[in-house]
Amino acid sequence: MTAPAFNASDAAYAALDTWVDAHFDEELRFLQELVRVPTDTPPGNNAPHAERTAELLAAMGLTAEKHAVPAAEVHAAGLHSITNLIVRRRYGEGPTVALNAHGDVVPPGEGWTHDPYGGEVVDGKIYGRATAVSKCDMASFSFAVRALESLGTKLAGSVELHFTYDEEYGGELGPGWLLKQGLTKPDLMLAAGFSYQVVVAHNGCLQMEVTVHGDMAHAAIPDSGTDALQGAVQILNALYTLNHDYLAVTSKVEGISHPYLNVGQIHGGTNTNVIPGKVVLKLDRRMIPEEDPAEVEAALRRTIAQAAATFKPPRGGRALRVDVKRLLLARAMKPLPGNQPLVQAIQRHGEAVFGEAIPAMGTPLYTDVRLYAERGIPGVIYGAGPRTVLESHAKRADERLDLNDLRRATKVIARTLFDLLHGAR
Image (cartoon, rainbow, N blue to C red; front, side, top):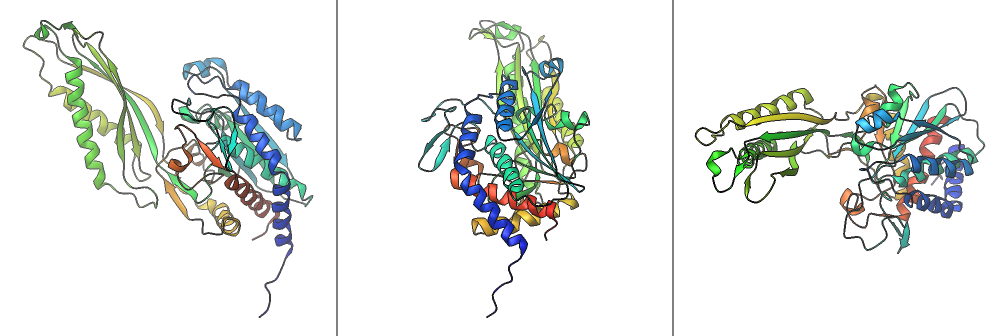
């Protein structure tokens, strides 16, 4: 039997893997430093983390441009401070590949058995908020670039690191702001994700605030008012009926099932002995890639209006008044034909490094990656992490990352960059 041919690319992949292994302890320390600076959003005071990240990058020879979003825009979004970072590495004429990871995270919440800002390593896993989503990929992307440059090989094109701080609020002041300002326009982009699949599409998300106005009254004479909570219950029942109907609407994208709706927040009333005069609902509607966001929003507004109109207040009481406000519209990410070089490279190297096939599929999550796709920039989602969000404990207590996944994902990304910028196929 003839042995398979060995070529220069194989030697480069081996050298990249060796470099990542030799510098993995340094990569872990870098991630720990990133975790130890909180970026809870809300409140969203994230400029300090960007400053610290830029310091750490500079110590590795990676100079970061600091792009502070104007305070007025940040405050209007309900946040405190945002400074987005861009690291540009130009090697020659050719495509620009952007690697995007976000530093903002949801607050830790309760139930942790490890310090959410400690970066503690136990049994081969690192614990802490954003260890899995997505400060880990600030590390994997940075060290993949360093591994690539360690080869000293002539490359064609550029790499940009985009470290942004608005994913939890939709990304408009993160990648959206960088793109809108004309600060970047890559040819391809890779965003933070997990290691066992390459994501080519994701759901959209519409978030709305529904304010139900009744007429506050004393609980001893309830008929003298209009109970906003009862009206809200009628609206909720209509929404949950609609949610059941969504089960019959299916997506053709593997990994994405059907649309769904969740009411995640309800507040209102003034006291136990007072008929509530106002109740506020906040809802989250996930949209499959095949849906039109304008039609989805119009249908929700009709359902809410019809439910409110059928509510009967007490005789002589005021009719319900309902205000509906859009809080967020995140469009679905749809696969763009130009993403194939990324998909193919990640699948090839993912299988080689992880020892199993890496499927290309969709995810029911939504991310700020869509902002690149909306501008015609082909991209995919891939990075360091387990098979599912549930395994990672992302947005839950004891978020964690298996260090083997971090190590191997860094190798896959470094190899992929080599293919894209060296011309290997």
